[in-house]
Amino acid sequence: MSCANESNSGCCGVRGSHLLAALGALLIVALIVWAMRHYTTPPSLTAARAAERQKHLADLRVAEAPAFHTYGWVDPAKGVVRLSIERAMELTVAAGGDPAGFRKDLIERVEKATFVPPPPPEQPSVFE
Image (cartoon, rainbow, N blue to C red; front, side):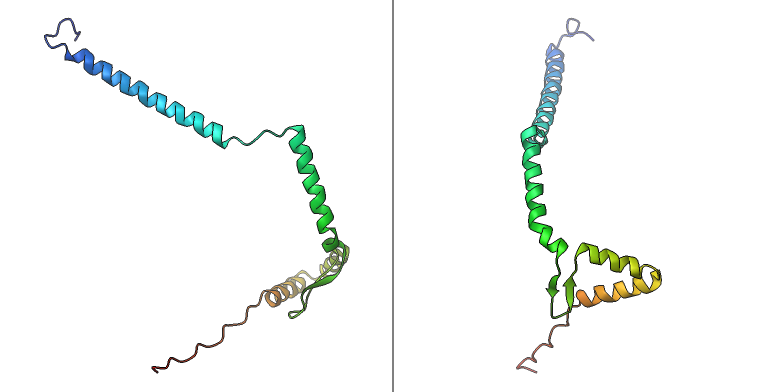
């Protein structure tokens, strides 16, 4: 079916509008893909950014060093203390000879440290 043989010349207009709609849809999809790539691409790791990240890491390590190498109370009411890493490793190696006992002791300590007492009972309503 060619347009020259048809008495109705509307067929070429329909094909053209379909082609135009398909090209428009492809253009919209391409625009969305470009926008997503543009807005979701992280900034490149340049030397300046790497130096900034290294500085932040060094600052964090300096700030956290006392917590790693000193003793202190985490929660005195529950008897939870903070040990130095060296002492914690020594205790772990010493207790690791009996895995079942070590596991049982560890579970008991976690339950003690994370225990939340039940809420107090509700006051009775004045209508009861």
